[in-house]
Length: 243
Ligand code: ZN
Image (cartoon, rainbow, N blue to C red):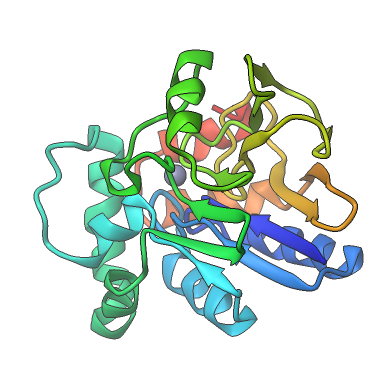
């Protein structure tokens, strides 16, 4: 069974189209969406509609989805994220916001494959798993052999082999090794690992192979839309740097 995992689309329709094209070319059995469909980008409604049209087997809620879905206080967000969230709320309409509200915080696509946006420890606490110590703590709570997440927009893997935890940054992993894997699938619409290209992850469950894929997309159009929508210009500029 081949599973395509996408996360952190963030309203970037150009990147999402490019990723879906590559997923279709790869030929997968299931699509999984790890949240943050909206926020930052200029096409939150179109991205949300396209996710629904593609009928992923599992969709979990991200923090930007949760904040765009209701009128909660934005104190936890930096000014850029807060400005984008207020704008996004206006774009979505009540039906889409209700759909976002109803998304679960975690799911499973196989009994041994857990799916979350931020962390398997406490998915609604929106922790950022960046460093080895973060991954080691989260792996201690992970109930399954595999868990895939997003949230930091930095693709990487934490591997536990029974004695030690390693933090790995590769484009391909032999997932038959080790006891537990906690894998960040990268971001479709706002990568932050210094590479501007859209990211998604292919997990071949039978072959136990995990592959990170990077795809170029029409970033100029995407940036023009962000500026044209009246969103902060920094949200367009950061896309070129992958930060
Ligand atoms: Zn995000």
